[in-house]
Length: 160
Image (cartoon, rainbow, N blue to C red; front, side, top):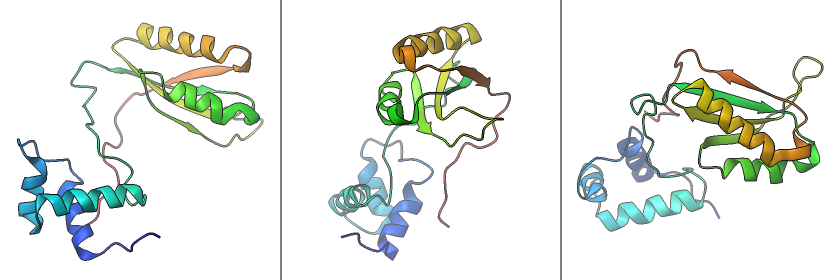
């Protein structure tokens, strides 16, 4: 059964939502900020993960600063009855940062599977998308690459 978010959970989320502290003992740093032990912080984060209050704890590199400036959202038309399996396969590719199912809007928009691909050049992105097409095989019923032209948002939901 899911626990309601309480004030202590809220303080932990607020202390971590902009990133985990870059210190040798980050959970100890968070614990000091919120008035708990590091063990309590880790237990609460583990519970919040298990209950779906937070989705993940992970490093999020700034791909622009790493030289990955050719960012393409590959959009695919695949059979709806295969989309779960195909999405898992594409999402598991090391060069796909996120992959998800989206509704179509025929006749204007027929793409139902989206996968973000980062590369240093457009040629690199196109090569990776070609690999994805090979992976999909007969289930690739059409695709395009929509390239980013600017950054509109770089943060998730923030609790104040």
